[in-house]
Image (cartoon, rainbow, N blue to C red; front, side):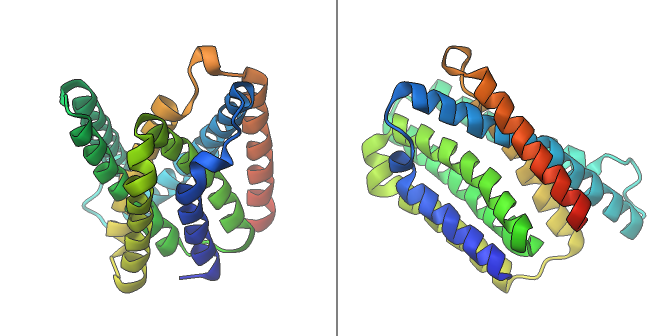
Length: 236
């Protein structure tokens, strides 16, 4: 595990502990915050996640002859979308007890955090790349944590934020102690990428009435320009 991955994990835990305090209290400022963070997240999906999925597909095609469809990794990403969307939809439509809804969502987001933390650890990100990786994922985590806090404020403050932080710690531990094959790592990355894409477009982008497009667009342009420049100069 690189020092950058260690700092990234600590940053993620810090976000879950203090998400409701980081956000501004005023409604207008919150709208612009979420519009900006949504822009960062959308940019991250298009300039990092999708190209990375393409690279993973190319790598397994070179290493293994049994994958010949040129789309296996994308299929695993689709499975991630279906599983996370299906679980969220089922809970919201069928769980009449708020206690069940809370624990089910916490359980799935613990798994989500664990897999993200594992991907960060196994990817060996460092330096400037770790900073921009942390920024995009961190903003994403703030939106997720705020949604949980808004819906279950008391339970989230007492229990939920600690459990989400534990998910990150478990992902760290697995990344440090377990050695998976390149194929397994690619499949995990694809699965969590699908879930992340769903979360960004379904839950992180603010609703039309709460969105501020200029702030959203500035987040997209700023993160895209910086990331593409760094990719060019540092050959990410």
